[in-house]
Length: 304
Image (cartoon, rainbow, N blue to C red; front, side, top):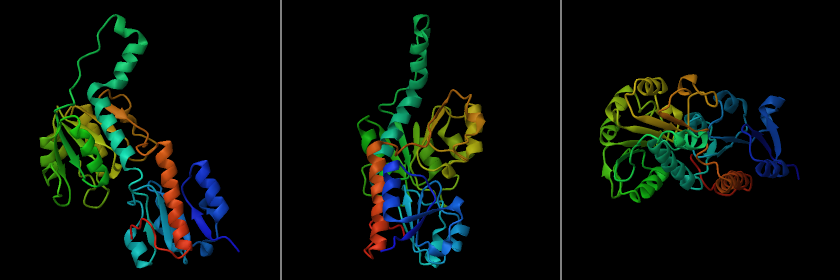
């Protein structure tokens, strides 16, 4: 029996690649594929699928995303074409929440700089400067979906005063502040976990950063599009905010060089979900969705 034809856009760990190659005839964009053969596309949240590629595949019925984000895919076009889209939620929630908390601690206590201070021998001649307390501080979580709620659960262990913004109030034991600017005014630590949509595009802008103020820290593990990066760089360069810990960037992996000399930033290589266990689970769920489609079974985690 011939194997189904899929188009692979993203790269995957070897175990996932081996499984895909065994189950499907895998085509790649740089190999001049016959788009007429393609029934499904395997990609990730960052790469997405260009609209012209979707339009070029007349028999496309499924886009399976390795990751939770789907902002790099035109869902309206997919709905118009009756193309289903799946992602891999839940399996990466805990790791993303862990990294958000780790980044918050690292930027507040300047853990990377303190490690360099100890390693370099500077400790022998000077104590490391005093840093900022985390426990008991005010946390603002922008986006209260799965990841935001997991972050909040962890922050309760630090005795933090937790508030959040979301599309609507949720039955949660935290303060609801619908406006992002007002949430920033409340927060010592503003943690962005929102999905990237037209509503959240540059929701962290010059006004929001001004509201966060010179004692406030920004932590972003969501999407770069949620942040006006130029406004953030200006705020960091002029000390309008205390600092930022960032896992995502415009034009990544080519980070804007203005970030590099800043001592009030913590830069991470978009790896919130990058643990062995979670990446295996993400790959399995993506492949399970592909398998369900080709077996004519209900998709496991449909977006549309």
